[in-house]
Image (cartoon, rainbow, N blue to C red):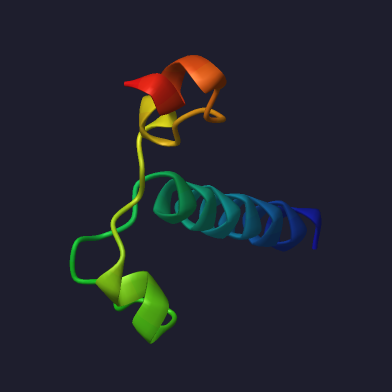
Length: 59
C-alpha cells in the first residue's frame, strides 16, 4: 500500500514540475489568453521611459 502511495506522490510531483516548467518556458504553439495579449509585445525594462522634465520640453 505504501508503495502505491509513494508512486502517486512521485506522479504528482512530476506533474507539478511539468506545470512549473511550462509556466517558466511556455511552448511556442501556446495560444494567447486574449486578443490584447496576442497583439502586444512585452516591453523591455528600459522601454518604459521616464517622466518628462522641463529640460526635455526645451529639446
